[in-house]
Length: 341
Image 1 (cartoon, helix red, strand yellow):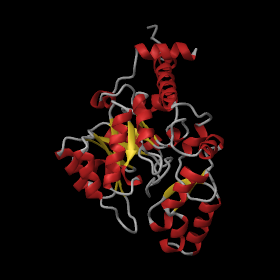
Image 2: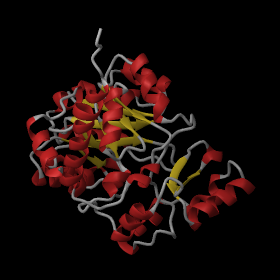
Image 3: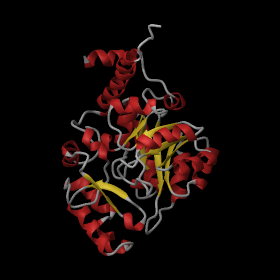
Image 4: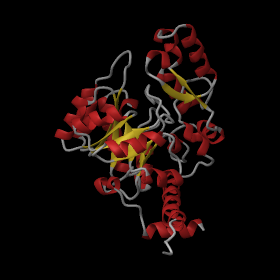
């Protein structure tokens, strides 16, 4: 049955404004992820027919990003994106130098995210890039639209990483985006399977952005113990930290995250009290070296409830798209009954 559906999708791919604009085969994006979005990850997704993404700030500096972009070019001849996230941090990176390298290396698709993107959306648009801005609120999406973004990645509260402070889930967020936005958008946050892709398209989206789901793939450059935790976790296996400092992050529920929550309850708003627990280097070690799922605070989304295997990126993409196509072309079509009148 699955083989038949894959053959069917080869003849009847899902065509959307996303696939048309970027020249990709399937309407699936691998979102930017810290310590996951390396060249190998991005190339595997792009070679599988989706849009892979390199995470700029995972690299220590702009020249290291240049090398990573060139590495990705050597691994794929398909389009890929670079994510540039503007977040409140103790020591801000040199965003300008990262942006300059992205343009110099001829990257044509950029995923921007975070606060005050005006300068960077303008810069990327002036240099001929297609800009997908990720945001968690309709008002932010409308601002990005006004600033010239080509597409919005509408990020629901279910997402891993930073869901913002609005707490709006995708069921309402996507329906509202379809009503309010003039530019196209994709669904992001809690996305993992073909039924969700079909639902996202029904709600007006042009595709789907996935982070956590792509972490549980063969090519994801993280330790197998992390992937195993994602397969075993359910919808209750995440928690929220850094709420008290207005920089909420959805992370894996473990002893390190619970310690952060305890400190925040005792010292609300005092970032320095728990800074040592949320350092990026802690979870880089978990992801790249130790595979210890409990000793660091690491991002993942509620979509882990829908993860029960670790396929290749190509297998994952083809399964999601064929499942969505079957739902749209068969199940939903069969529900529309012609009137006998």
